[in-house]
Length: 368
Image 1 (cartoon, rainbow, N blue to C red):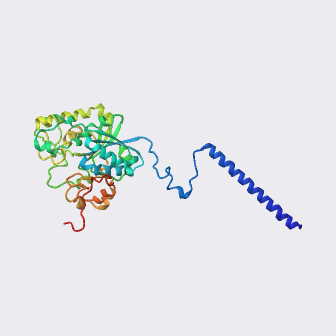
Image 2: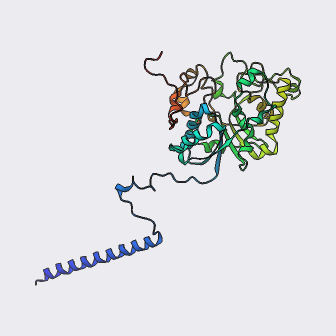
Image 3: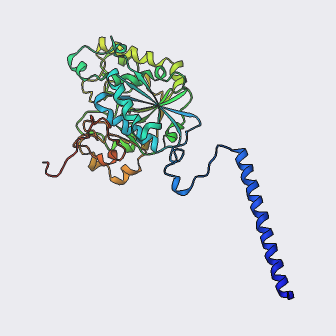
């Protein structure tokens, strides 16, 4: 055997020995990893879609962001769309409190559990209409217009007793920003709530012409009444919209805000304190009184409203609507109805009802 062949054989033997050593090291490493995590299995590429562990959303942790929203049976689609927009646009640990009536619970549970919202954390609380006994005018027109669930916002600390801070949302909203940003808005010392003022540049664009002074206090309260006069409030003070509320629940409890609101509701049934031209919800006047000069301000882009009024499509550009953090279809025309502006934005967040009971009304080809 020549020297050259000997060298080749030696090199081959060394290569084989090296491969044997590498193999043993890999086997030892595998044993170590298995001992540290014996339940972990190897998932092959083609198994990923079949593995129940993959594709599941990780549990959200950290500080809970409590959001209260109401759910009326005829508007459940709105609630689901609003919740979906909040949840999908944030990675925060959002927990919903849904205030509703008994006839809605089963339908709502099915809708949430059978769709992409099945991982959402929520509790359902039943609103008791008897809470409003003696607090609503017996005038037939008023009684017909009253929607009991709209008063749930007055009882925030009752429905979320363990929280120090919470957000209230009307059901006709879509959240396009991260709700944590709204939650982290600073409230001034001693303030129990923050609202978006009706005179800010964003919302003022949507004020309805000919609807009275619906952006200041005189549009909501009768300043000829003694009880209102005694408060010393200025009639031209800018009002706010309570469709979005950031609440410091500790201050709310300490100042007994709920009882203050109830007192003004009761007094109104006796003295008719609300404005005769009131075009908005009757929940607004008590809030305006209790929080006069004692509330903080929400960024206007976190409450772009009046999308449910006539001509909203002409007042707001698509670019502005896209940039808004929160959209509110307050007004007569709702985005699940036939004639609302920017209903296509709402449609992106709507989840079809698995029971088939709720259907948005949409125009079809050939409709007049």
